[in-house]
Amino acid sequence: MADHDLVLKNGRVIDPGQGLDAVTDVAFAGGKVAAVGDGLSGRVVEDVSGKLVTPGLIDMHTHVYWGATSLSVQPEAFCRGSAITTAIDTGSAGPGNFAGFRKYVIEPSPFRILAYLHVSHAGIFGVAKGIEVGESDNLSLLNPAAAAEVADANRDLIVGIKVRLGKYSSGIHGMNAFDIALQVAEETGLPMMVHIDEPPPSYIEVVERLRAGDVLTHCFRPFPNTPLTPDGGIRAEVLAARERGVFFDVGHGAGSFAFEVGRKALAAGFYPDTISSDVHVLCVDGPAFDLLTTLSKFLCLGMPLDAVIRAATGNAALALGRPELGSLAVGAVGDASVLSLEAGRFDYADTVGETLAGEQRLLARGVVLGGILHV
Image 1 (cartoon, rainbow, N blue to C red):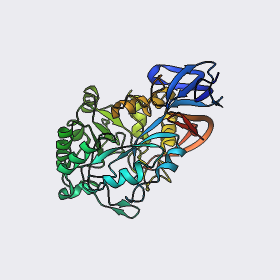
Image 2 (image 1 turned 60 degrees about the vertical axis):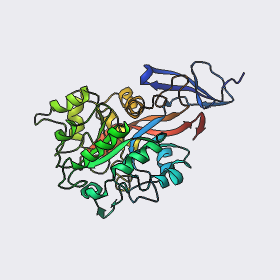
Image 3 (image 1 turned 90 degrees about the horizontal axis):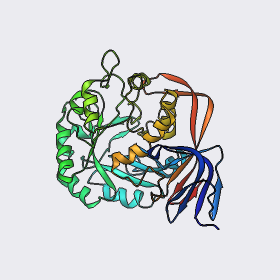
Image 4 (image 1 turned 180 degrees about the vertical axis):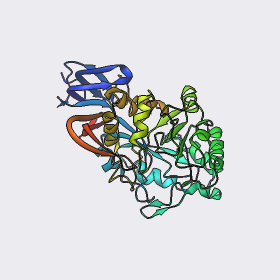
């Protein structure tokens, strides 16, 4: 009897949130995960022998307000190419243009798109090849009242407030933009995602102000503004921030991830909470490329497979406050990613020019969205 809509059969099912790593079946019905176990039957059966089946991958940091912001990429092609079921846009849109993002990009997309709303009225409007305008450098562009209003009106899609800090994003203004974004976060009860590039402000100034549930992205930046002490340990302020519930996100991008920093952090036992691509027009053709390339880099740096998968599934769902995502528990949203893990020689690059000869690579082989298989 075909008692399920879809069954993925004989895959290596990895769901770190449930402590699951076994060759078995996953069944979907009514748009949700219906069962995990051996010998399941369904109206559509897909043999995924030799492949990995994970909860639907979540890319915690993307820019997908395509066609309206110069830095954004087309979300459908990007998500399909990296087996992503949920893309989190991090500040491409602000309160002045979120309505268009919702109507023309988010709602038509077959992939789930959630967003951190930028406190800047027009979001990230001046970043592309040959141009970089830091939206937080002009404090008159920050619009906290409208940001709070738009966030409240779009609670189904907006998961937090975004602000970008640093030499290239906020100029000489230090923590001023942070203070404005924090007002919005507190007014709405939402977490913040905070971008940091080169000082000012310093990495420590930022992490000391982050609250439980807030996300520091670009957490493994190259020098300056890294989490490391001069001897390669993790700064006490960073450890204290994690202890109080701050999330540390990779946000690879075009200039925000260094192998050297990642290698030393992992050696110190400091794993990223979430691994994300920060895909945009300046890095989609390298060095970040996509989420699976970023995940593969961490595999090749020695991070265990289950920890890498957790960082793009359950941990991301936790940071987003969306426990129905990132899991293959019965009753969870019926999303899954089908991947292959290949062995060989694969060349990777970080954002400062270091190359890594890796022996593993994750590739996309299909996605399940709401219980429907797309290959």
